[in-house]
Image (cartoon, rainbow, N blue to C red; front, side, top):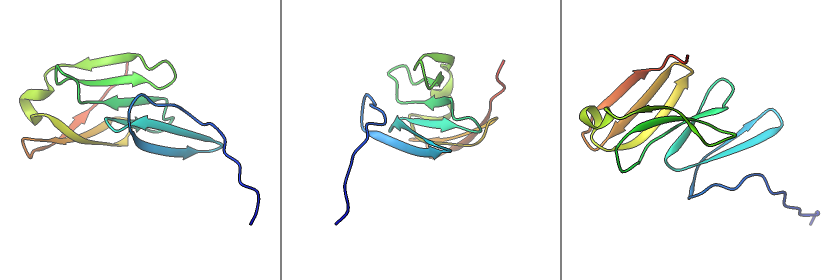
Length: 105
């Protein structure tokens, strides 16, 4: 058997939901977050008590955008994907899949 070594990459606050290997970096976020392309320096987060959808900065973990009107369309969000920098797709307890267009400022 070869040598086994472990390297500390990241620590997240709850169970890990997404791991990405980008160039020479490994990024990890919680189950209620998904990283946004193309730089993966922002994430979309859900699962808050106020049912908001938030976009945050990966490095600082601070929200840069909060939408509190999500509950009206989706019920509670259970799944999310970001296929592009401007599109966020969510689905939840209402069984409706919603496509959001995000324009950063």
